[in-house]
Length: 157
Image (cartoon, rainbow, N blue to C red; front, side):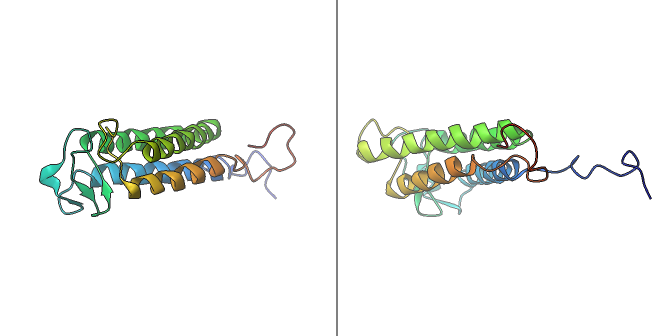
């Protein structure tokens, strides 16, 4: 029989569900940001602009992208990966990142596709993806941080 001190701590390398979600979202944002700079994955790559609705580059032929758009995805990815290291960081990334995406969705609905205000740029596919990302990220921010010890006192998120 081993003593508690002799047993390996299984929770040392354990990621909570909220940390795993933040890490996965971060990794996907990194991949999407990189993909926006790869000809073939991005159609009309020769028309990739720094910013603005004039950029006709389309990630996977669907989502309008620009240098700014791709860099924002890369920054989101770095933030997601870095903040996934702690439960509170992961929760904040998912919650606040999701809220930013919801604001971006509303912004995309309010500005016209050809408007000078469409500086990111955004098209209809981007808008609906932003709604999905925003709702999903905010919902995932409420995952429990620790599923191993449900008998703890205090908040479990």
